[in-house]
Length: 151
Ligand code: ZN
Image (cartoon, rainbow, N blue to C red; front, side, top):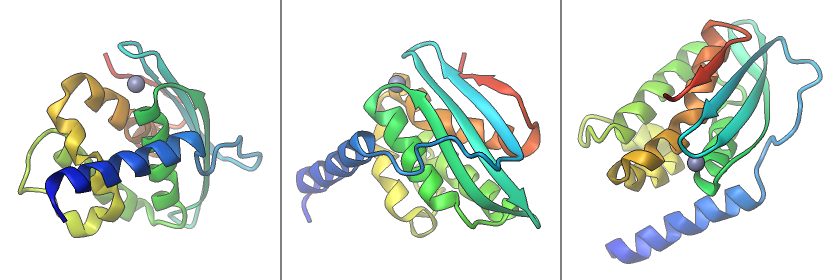
């Protein structure tokens, strides 16, 4: 597949997730939560987690923001459901490496479809949109009830 075709496919996936975000709801039985705010773009989200036996049993989010922040949160939640906390943190590390432009150091096989966000690393302002949900997830896992701000 050529580079422009690939890019188009990525854009479609991001657009599709932003229009129909997965796990876009409050989790009634959540036992962990965190909030994220990206003042640069105005993205806001609340993340709800149900953590049991060292794994993310269920996950949901609510919020408003640009297409990239919403699609990123939607795809992140679909990947995280059922993951062990150790796996979730490893995935966070890979995603972060990819977006900080450390190409060649992240493992595309581990990220799967999340690789669609690799192009975002070229746009520093957008990186904060794409990583907001991930930083919020990290806060939810480590410091329950915290608000993270990208500034
Ligand atoms: Zn944004």
